[in-house]
Image 1 (spheres, helix red, strand yellow):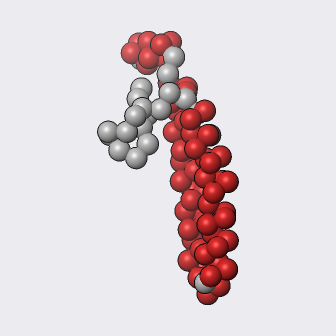
Image 2: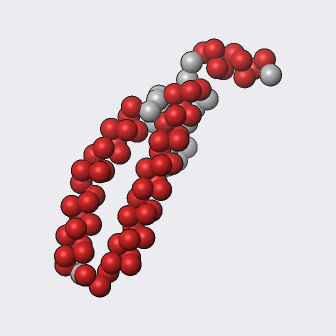
Image 3: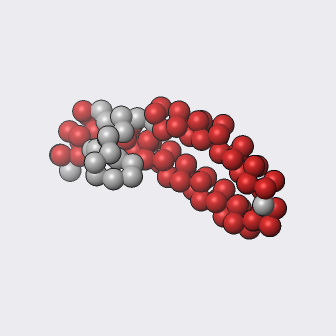
Length: 84
């Protein structure tokens, strides 16, 4: 099974490792962006809270897609699925 993130033209995932690497990068960069935004515009806290929740929801979706890609990648899975 091919699992893609974002669009049908995206490169198929081959497992969870690329997803975890991307999430790690986001976890290092985005909090700094959020902090700067909040310092510059303290009144934007409600908007920022929604953005943080949305970012983590996207990351959770990516983890699930990576798990699915890794689980369905082996030939044995494809063969078993064809038999059912």
